[in-house]
Image 1 (cartoon, rainbow, N blue to C red):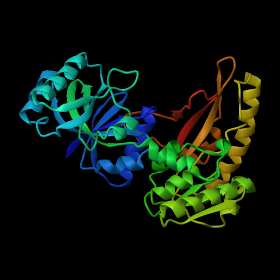
Image 2: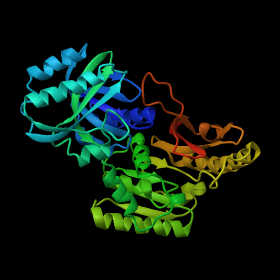
Image 3: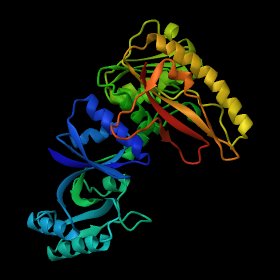
Image 4: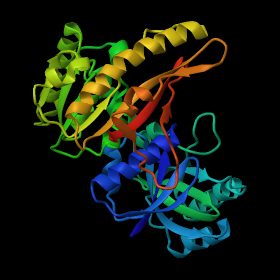
Length: 387
C-alpha cells in the first residue's frame, strides 16, 4: 500500500471524520499512520481522485520519501533523479504541513539550486501573503498537478516528502453554485458543507438520501452529482418550486441520470409526508432560527432556542418512527450572545430516539463544529443512529 497525505480544510476534525466514513463505507482498506492539526497520513491503495467526492480535503499528496532529517530527504531526491526528468520549463511550489520545520529556507534553496544545475526554467510560485504553500486555486491555475511540481513536506517527527496528485477545485464548485437559476442565501447550504454532510452518512452511489429540510436543494444537488438518488422535503411552496427548478437545471446540465423528488410538506409530520417512500440515509440543515444581524441578548437567544427545540422534538419523534438502521447527519444551532455566552439546543430533543455516533476511533467527539466567517450561529453537526 502507498502512503497518502490528506491536507485538511478549515475544520480538521470534521474533515477527518468525513475521510474515515467515506473510506469505510466503500470498503477501502486504510491505516492511519500519522495525524497532525492540518493533515493526516494514511496508508492505502485508494484512488486519489476520490478528492472529487470529498468536501473537507484540500489536497491529496502521494508520499515518495521519508526520513529523519531534511538532508535524508534531499539525498533520496537526488538518488531517484526526481528533478532531472521534469519538463524544461514549468512552475513549482513548496508546502509544509504538520509540526514546524525550521529548515524551510534550506528546502527552498535546495530546489532552486538543483533546478539551476539542471538548467531548467523553473518558476518558483509563492502563496500570496505567505512565504510557502500553494492554494487549490493556484495549484490548478499553475498546472502544478500536470507538471508534478507541487512539492509537499509533512513533519510528524519523521519527515515525509511527496507531490500533490489531486486537489480540490473551487472553480468547479463555484460554477455549480452560482450557475443555479434559483438563489436564496437563507435557504441554502454551502455546497462544500453539503458534500461533507452527505459523506458523513456513508450513503453510497445508487442509494437514496433524504433531506427533510431541503431549501433550494443544495444537499440534493451534491448527492445527485455523486451518483445518489434523493428525496427532499420543503415546507414553503415557493422554496420547493425553487428547489425543483434548480434540480431540473442541474440534471439538464450534468446528465447524472439519478432520480430525485421534491415534496412540499411538513417534516414535523415526516411519516405522513413521505407516505412510505424508502431512503438509506438522512442529511439536512433544518431551520436554524431567524436571521441575526447582531449578537442577541441572552434572553432573546434562549427564546429562539426554546422555539427551535419544540420544532426539532416533533421532527425527531416522527423520524424515530420510520428509521431503522439509517444514519442521520443533522445540523443543530448554537447562538453566541452579546455577553459572550453560547446557547445551544438541549440534546434531549433527539436522545430518546437517537444516539450519537463517533466515526473516528481514539478521538472522542460529541458534535463537530462548523463556523462560517462572521456568523453569529455556530453549526453543530451530529451523527446519529436509532437507539
